[in-house]
Length: 258
Image (cartoon, rainbow, N blue to C red; front, side, top):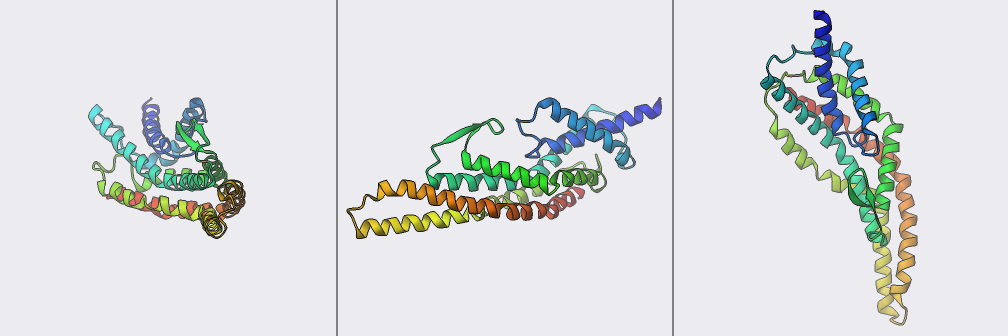
């Protein structure tokens, strides 16, 4: 009986970390996935990990105050890891929004049930492509391996304080969102800049030409053409970004070690 109680307590500790960990991952927390599926996923992952990580688990908290403080620390750990991964997704959304605005698609927005916001069509397309790339390179396996490794790198309840400087470091790293967004949309940005420049020169040289009428179909055609080139380059670009996340995620775990 004592062994069953111990295993149940270990399961609850693993479930706490797994739930806080997956809560902020940008692909798993999609509103398009039913809540029942997400809850069942966490329960199964915790059930599988419990016998593996049981030797590194601490005794179950004996007081409610200790349990609440433990839950807060685990919540912040999951938040810090999830923010790092969301940098890629935010950069992709910025690239899609930039391309859509320059193409004249900025006024054509869709309601995204995942973010409950108005997103452009091109941004949604890039997000779906990002999810496909993430799954194709076994990014979900990386999540599970990192989750299992976190129990030995940052033991549950092993640190009572929070490394607040880590969140300051993450806020500074947020600038890469705009850098990645501009790089991903660079073909569209360069092509449309040259197109607008050429149309401006034509309007100055030959005022009789109705540049405004010509510019709309020309801008859309060239924009979509070079956006397709961006899609061709997005696969290797996103693969490199997701592969490069291993180092900063390990740095986050090291920061939580103290």
